[in-house]
Image (tube, rainbow, N blue to C red; front, top):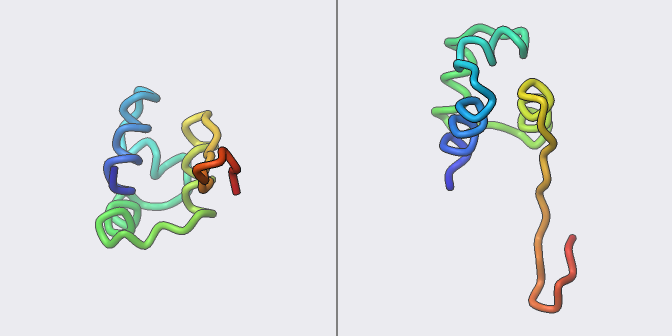
Amino acid sequence: MTTENLIKTAISYAGITQIELARRLNTTPSNLNQKIKRGTMTMADLEKIAAAVDATLECHFVFADGTKI
């Protein structure tokens, strides 16, 4: 799943629009849309989005032996 799809799925699940997400992030809808389309989201951006939709962000590598980093 691309970052764009991940964000769109998360806001849909949260029952908000991308415009509402932009408002919660104190940015303009245009700026948010451009950042999503360019694929320039950082981990910090994704953490802010997670907080804005009342979720947690989990990102880790899982090795064959079950180790998570």
